[in-house]
Image 1 (tube, rainbow over the protein chains, first blue to last red):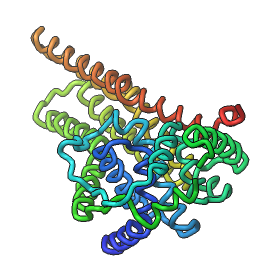
Image 2: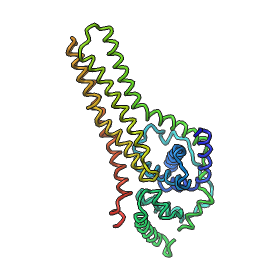
Image 3: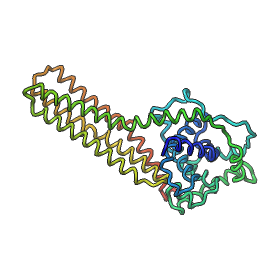
Image 4: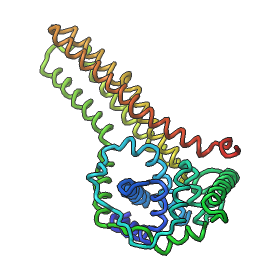
Length: 170
Length: 191
């Protein structure tokens, strides 16, 4: 694959799926410099993954998998073992916040998702983005029944929390 | 909840600074390929350079010791071992599935390779070279200070390798294995 082709695919993917990438970044990184760092890491992993993409899965499934996997590993150890990476202070800002009306309920939802462990956080994002059990199982590499059990538990937890936030639930 | 969540699809929270992103990808790509190869190529270069130096000494020195020959043979074996490991690792990389679990297993396997290498390097690299060097020194007349200097250098390099193993690679490996267990453990979800 030529460098130009890879660049073209990368730019198309980034443009088409940026909203999804921002969700992953926001669910796993909690300060603006961390979000810049995680976004950079995800973008790099997506760039690297392009030659391996075989079209036997949908692009969105592929990108979601790469993004979640990167976010989980970043969350676990990349902060601790920042091998040869720039410090936050020296980092160029990759993400510029758009000025828009904020919905408090969305902030609440991210807060609650952020309290879950790394794996459950991934499953919550996939669930909220409407992926089927089969697709989730393909992304995560675990069985559909395993996905089902985990989703049941997450849904129950989020519903309970939403009732604490608002008596009628969200 | 789904309705609140879907708001973000129409109004993304951020805009991307694409020029900065491309710059960072380019620099990371160059750094990663450098650091991936530096270990294998670096060690190979050290071994080849040492083997050449010893070989030149055979030509210049009319009475090379048996340990000179053994040193060159030992170095060639070490080069073979490094490249055998590299080729095996590259082949294994093709067998990981394109799932989150597959990626995790891939990362764990790469790290295990690195961990095992830094753990065992003392035995297949430092110790044989130290023994051969010292046997060679024993054959020729060297001062006590030279003995102490060479001994200290080998001990220090062995300690540094153990430190890298214990401080960096081992905890990172444990961390990733715990993550894999969390992803695959059915007991965890049935609670």
